[in-house]
Image (cartoon, rainbow, N blue to C red; front, side, top):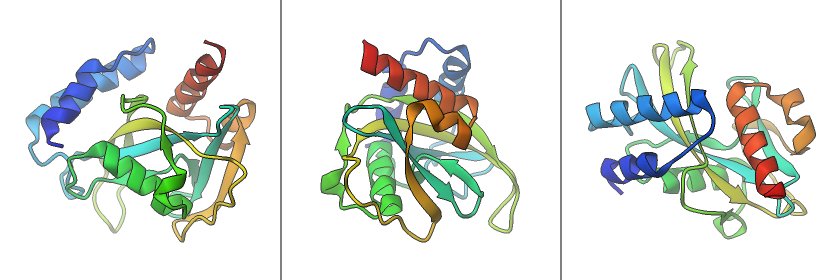
Length: 184
């Protein structure tokens, strides 16, 4: 995949959320302006890939308590130069859950959500933005999930309780989209 594939995914993505539509426009502009947009050492930001993981009934989402940020998030991470952002999201999901990729089912290869969020300055680099491209994946919630050293804990959280773990606007969007999938 080349950045033109990501641009095509962004062009095809539609949303009813005004904040997300603005993120899509910003992401597109950023990707067009930065040939090296998938490199983590690109400041003031870079593209990352994530997966919103749901169970087959789509009434639970998988959240990880991130060790570095001390917050609950969906699996995801840096592209490290890999322009295939879907592959990045799936790889990060496998790494962070500790599950073999065969247990991770891509629901569809379209973008599920786009978010841009600020990462505070640290010893790893200055304050910057993650242009996070998210895909919807499914895993059986009866599998033991070992996690890895990046997370304190991995939990299946009922959709109606997700906000108790992460009340960010983007998490609300993904939860709302999941509810609509279940009922539509």
